[in-house]
Image 1 (spheres, helix red, strand yellow):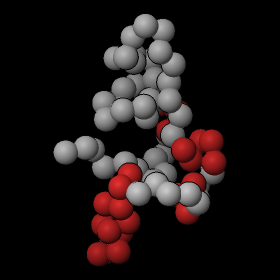
Image 2 (cartoon, rainbow, N blue to C red):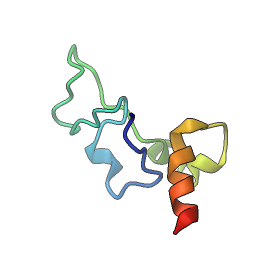
Image 3 (cartoon, rainbow, N blue to C red):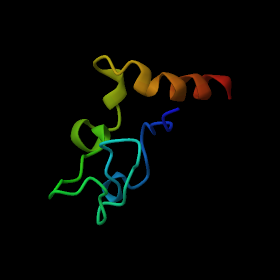
Length: 68
């Protein structure tokens, strides 16, 4: 099962969001000179999930918020 993808993490610049490993930005497990993948909020703003088709990536997170 994939890890839950946070909609707006507090410090997205500290993590690589390229896969389910969520490596620290200064020690990526991908190797070969791989660069850090930015969180969508860093590129598109805090309301990034309201535009486009993010499908399964945020479905679980939205379901959890509706139950609270």
